[in-house]
Length: 476
Image (cartoon, rainbow, N blue to C red; front, side, top):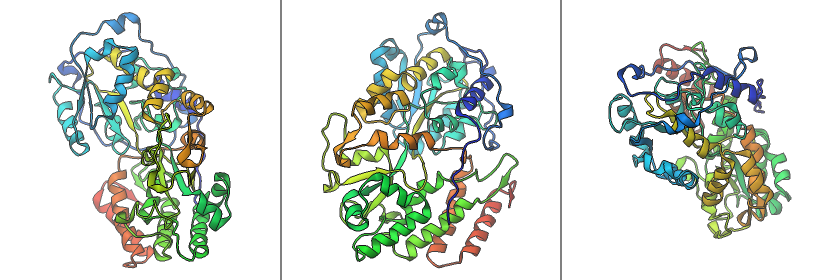
């Protein structure tokens, strides 16, 4: 029951060049006139990786000083769903104070209504508060990047040079799958990991290092075997996880291919069958503390749970910070370690892109470059906020200076630990159908692990549900 680990067939730099050259239009400013009203966003056709033979040479698009200063003094609107992006913009105001008077940051205040509000505004190009730039969350980024409501970053003056220090997955996720034009960039990376109790690992398993732990759980087969061993050797005092739901992010990021390919064909790949087997074993062999979402997080501050899947954002729970003012999260300060786990994955993140009606693409480019490309600015963001920034040079420098050493992790350098995960994380499996189809799968998996139907029927019912929900797809 070994899950395959896909190797990319296209070099990242070549992919970057393709995304950028595909989007070079030479446009620097877009007037808010009726001729620029974006067409109705259509459902994107999902493809896999970019064929090497289709990768053209990249062309650079530079923003001249004249074009940078040529923008009007009208307000430049940036929309997001919370205050995080607004707080990060303060870092670029320190080096570009002239931007602060132009930029109007709009915090909609609720993730639930953000898309509704932005969708409404994008239909009204003449509105004074029309969005010039919008934020994308990882779970809905393709809704906007795979549409005519957003423009390539090359239209804002970015070239492949600006992308050199970014982690590959943060680039591929923001490419329009219809033509591979890059539509957004991110200042942050959110690599995932498996965080476990190092003291319990040594006492129960004889494991003394993150490297040894990784050897044991580097596959889902190994993960299950280790979970069984922990339960047995602890006399059932310790379970591997709080809930079966803990494994979902890692599995969803470990798929071999999109649910729907560019020909409109739906396929259930092998990794999802492995997922069903794994959660069935975790549930029915009682390898977790409690089933379902309600069980997530329970027992983590006690000896009853061995570990959990998380991302760098979860380090907030530890109270860790660069200035050393960390608190004893869960009362187990210094007793944790992290390793990759069965598959490299990411969880969450925010991207920033310019809209088709952006009033000043030169300013949009300045913001993107300062927030998401400038190593100095991004280093300060990381030190000030704890963000794992989307800049390899910045994170290497911080790690080399010992800034990533975390007392909560027993002195382990978390930057060094997750750096290879951030580089290996993959997004080629994503498609615009993910949210709905994942929900349909969850219904059948829940029924399967509860014994309400066998695996064969659960799979058949899942495919039938997909076919009924999306009649235009060919379901294999």
